Image 1 (cartoon, helix red, strand yellow):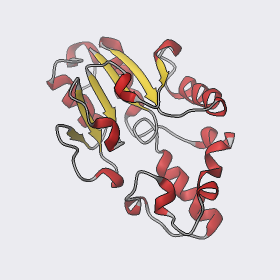
Image 2 (tube, rainbow, N blue to C red; image 1 turned 45 degrees about the vertical axis):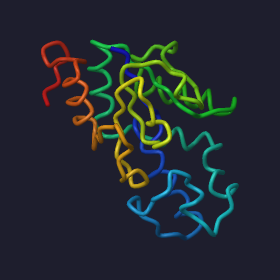
Image 3 (cartoon, helix red, strand yellow; image 1 turned 90 degrees about the vertical axis):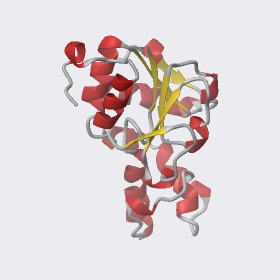
Image 4 (cartoon, rainbow, N blue to C red; image 1 turned 45 degrees about the horizontal axis):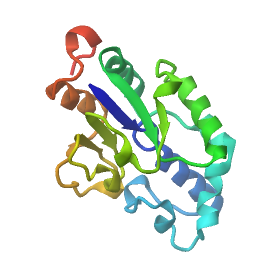
Amino acid sequence: MIIAIDLDNVLNNLADFWRRRINQKYGYYVEQSELKNYDMAANFPTLDREQVEEFLNRYDIWRDLTPTNGAQEIVKALNMTDEVYIVTARHGFPQYYPTFVWLRRYFPYIPEKRIIFAQNKEMIRCDVLIDDCPANLVRDDCVTLQYRQPWNSDRVWGTAIVNDWVDVYQKIRAIGGANEETSGISG
């Protein structure tokens, strides 16, 4: 089975980390649960887009960013029995190097040839797509798992909602992916 996994806000906690940086620099008190828009700038309407996005172009954000709870263990287990690809919409040369460094640090078992930069994720052929962006989940050519975040609390038609990585694992196992005997994960 080919499993495509989004990077930001699925494998890592970028929005929460980013929110805390904006709060600290600009004196906001926005909580993670208040991030109701996928577009981070829309969550901070008194700031301009450059102020909001300035943190993304700093290398230290990738140094301090951590994986989502359970992501490393579950992705490693899935990678033992399935073809796991990391698919990210990050773009531009400044994003490539820190992304690879971060993935090597936390997901060293994913080969570089399985890391794909693609703004149009519907071009990626897979059996399962795990993503938090509602626009990426509107597909009829694969199973889509909607990784729950505050900005996607409404289910995208045709998707299954997953709340954490154990939930991801259980849903994939139920559709015929990795199994407990070979992966060592128990749900």
